[in-house]
Every structure is written in structure tokens, then in C-alpha cells.
Amino acid sequence: MSSIASGPRCRGAPRKVRDRRTDRDANANKGRCGERHAAGIIPHVTTPVPAPFGLNRAIADLRPYAFTQLRARQDELAAQGVRLINFGVGDPEDETPQFIRDALVASITPASRYPTAAGLPALRQAIASWLGRRFGVTVDPERHVLPANGAKEALYNLTSLVLDPPGTPGRRDLVAVPELAYQVYGDSVILHHGEVFPLPLGPDWLPDLDAITPEIGRRLAILWLNSPHNPTGSVAPVAHYRRALDLAHQYGFLVASDEAYSELWFDAPPAGLLQACADPDFSHAIVVNTLSKRSNMTAYRSGLIAGDARVIAAMKNVRPRIGVATPEFIQKAAIAAWNDEVHVEAQRARYAVRRDLFLDLCARKNLTVEASQGAFYLWIRVPDRVPGRDARVFASELLDNGIIVLPGSFMGPRGSGYVRLAFVPAIETCRDAVAILDRIL
Image 1 (cartoon, one colour):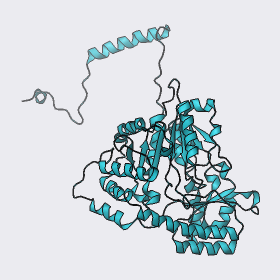
Image 2 (cartoon, rainbow, N blue to C red):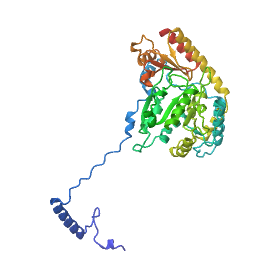
Image 3 (cartoon, helix red, strand yellow):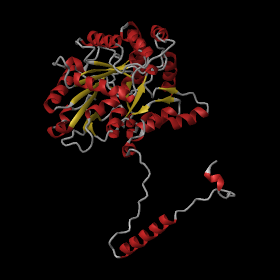
Image 4 (cartoon, helix red, strand yellow):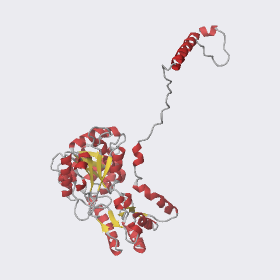
């Protein structure tokens, strides 16, 4: 029988038994401490209330994402039953080729396994072979190539490989981004606590590399280039890349080239950064490309990062830690896409027909189109009749008639007198839009 049972039975909740000796010692200590506090020997200490956790302060410095700025008025018009034709976002609307979809479906297995961050050897080989055919370079699939989940993963994560943490002695804290550019380059820099250097664009809409002075060059971690250029469609010659690499070797920074639109051209294939490399290891040079535009695979999130062996090795080390390994069925669809050029030529021809429709319209309406040699964009100068040649005013005027374009100012101040038209809708839709624009312009 328990000893508790032999004692008097308690009614209600059990009562805590106090140890009189502990109480007596505590009271004695309290008295002694009180005397010492009174004498000023032990200061009174107030335990601070911890502040709640905070968010990364750099988030507050991010600009609104350009495409979200278009949506409020669009939603309002759509609710009124207005037909909207969207030339504002560069998201291909044509079908992903059937053979690519078939490759994906055939690769789905009953059981699945974690994919490797380095990607399938067959995919790396397909990418290396494509780079060799397209740009005439010899690329080692083991040392110079990695898959990426679309271009955006590579664009964003590259910063973390090159930018040192704040407080690092001799830190390179600067990343040069064209003054009109895809927003992700700069956003990644800000969120990694670096500083963006807006690289001026010249009259030809190419980055002015003379702006990289010795003071800038010594602080520079990455120089971002983009050709064909979003939003202007300008195309850089190989000499431009060579000049950038000369500066990179002189000052020690990395040149990163976003070539997502390299296969959307209308006169001659654009040059690429790797073509300009004299070093067989592509030192100081990294290229990012994607199947999103050339193969209409935006939903597949499949691209590449290639070049400098040291950067690729670092990415191979970091990529498994951030959960971005590409699913194998996507990789096998990508292998099919990189190995075929027929579908790319067909898509390029479709875009050429749409582009000609709008170029003819602009000629009839005396609208000036600048740059626009590559990509699926037309960079249109806002007419002088628009007050202040304000891109937002002109875009709003078109939107009220159901035509969505992107004000150039959303990409940066230099674009304030221009709008970007992405000729991605189907040809029938483009013809409908041209009829509306013919009437209202």
C-alpha cells in the first residue's frame, strides 16, 4: 500500500507541501540582498522585454514588381466586360511542341526519387552540345554546365555566390545592372545587402562600359549584360562582350550575361558572351539561358547556367542546399528541346509574322520603333502629342481601348518616354489588336 494512502485523505485539488526550511533560507537571502541593494552594492536589474523578430529590412527597398502595377486597372476593365489583349507581359502563348510534351509524359515513373542538383549527365551533355553548335565553343559538361529552374533561379542565386557578407574586409559590394533591366538582377542584390550600380545605356541602348571607372571597377562583383535586351530588343556585338571581359580581367569582377532571348532574332543570330572568351575555362564569364522563350516552356522552369568552372563548382555545392534540383521528367523534356532546332525555327518564323504586322502599323501611324532587333519586343517611342511623352499616360490610353502594353518607366527612369509591346499573342489576336490601334491612333 502506498504511504500516501495511509495519511489523511485530501478533499479537492492536492495542496502543494511547503518546505519551511526553504522558505526560511529564501527570506534570509531576500533580506540580505535588499540591504545590499539599498547600500548601492548590487544594482537593480530590469529584464528587458525582447523585441519581436523582424523581417529583412532590405525588403522595404524593393520596387513594386513591374507586372503587378498593371493589374488593378486591368481587373477593373475586365469586370466591365472589356476585352483585353495583353502585350504587356513576355509570356509565350503558343503551344509547347508535342514532342517535348511527349518526352515529359514518357518520363513520369510510378516511383519517384529526389533529383540531383547537378542534373542528369545526358542533360548537361545536351546543353554543352547545343552551346557548341550555337556559339562554336567547347564546353565541358562536367565542369562548365549546370541546369537551372528557368533563368530566374540562376539570375537570383548567382549573387549569393559572388557577393561577400556585409562587414567583410575589402568586400566587393557593387553589382552593375543596366539602367533598364529585368527587375530580378537588382532585387537579388538588394536582398543580399549589396548595392546596385545603374549602368547607363548609350544611344544604341547598349550598356556604356566606359561608365565602369577604376573606382567602380574595384568595387564591382558582377556586371550584368542582357542581349537581346529586355525591354529594348537591342543586340550586342561580340566586340561589346570582349570589352566587358577585358574590364573584368583588369578589375577582377564577373561578367554575367542573360541570354534568354538569344534564339529570337530576325536578321542574324546574336553573339554570346562565351564566344568572346579567350580562356578555355571561361574565366570571369557566366551565361544564363532558358527554354522558356525558344521552346515555349515557361511552365517547365528549365534553363542553364554555363561558363567559369569555379562559379559552376560553387553553384554545384550550393544548389542542393536551397532545394532547387530540377525534377527528372522536366530534365528529360529539356533534353528533347535542346537537341532540336526545327521547332525553334518554326517559332521564330511565327514571331516574325507578328512583328511585321506591328512594324507596318507603326510605319503607317508615324510611331518610331527603336532598337528591337531581337527578342519578341518592340520598343516604341511615345508620340509627341502625349503630354510630356509620358509612357504611363500613353499606356493608359491604350488600355482604355483594351490594349495592354508595358510603360517603359516600369523598367527604369530611362524608359519614361517609351512603351514595350510583346508580340506574343496568336496571329489572329495580333490582327484584332492592329485593327483597334489603326482606329484609335
